Image 1 (tube, rainbow, N blue to C red):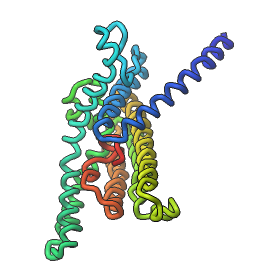
Image 2: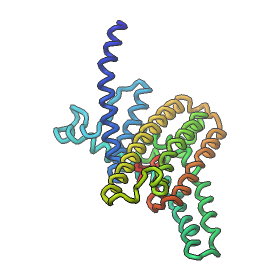
Image 3: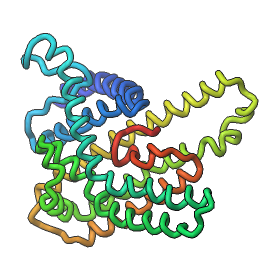
Image 4: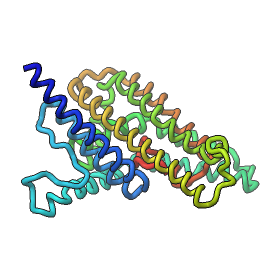
Length: 305
């Protein structure tokens, strides 16, 4: 009996490895643009639902990138059903996450204009507006960031767009998650560090790639393309890991939802999340992009920009 299990594992391991490499390749390529990153987000949401179902002992159908489930629909559904489901889930998740995050990301963008850009254009008499708006928006962002991963998991499991906004239920699940919510916040902040580093690449490119300034335009484009590819791979791997952990924590929290371990863990998680806005604003000083005020791979689309 033991030998049979061992043989099964030997057979399954190469298949799983090939599947993981396929997911890494497809996911990385799709994370190169914000449009195709929507497909990745949809695939991740469907995967979150499958992860929770697996933990509950329910039948699991792993989401595909392109193909649909056999026996459901006609030839077109089988050939493109997976892609269609990823697009649908990705669009709904993107809209839902944008509704939750735009109130503070738009305020951050406005704070940059009112602060740095205003001061750069000699509007010193209103210089305090920018930092004040940024601080207020960050205070608004912290509780949202602490709940955002579980809100996405809840929406994925319930398969309802409105589930993302069921604040009371998500609050109960967050409190039941207890220290796991703090752990998830720490993991999210650590996962954001590589993207902070990528923002500094244009500043330190000569130290990273000696002789970059002397390269031809084509060679510089190749180097930039390599960094874009690294950013896309980092975005996919970070999103894959964080969404999986969020699904596991959500599943465990729902099992003890009535325990309500208290708000202290939620508050501590929110404090840890404060590191992300700091990295975002410092990164903008090194390499400014208006679009990246509105998106970060850890909280919205898995696209590094």
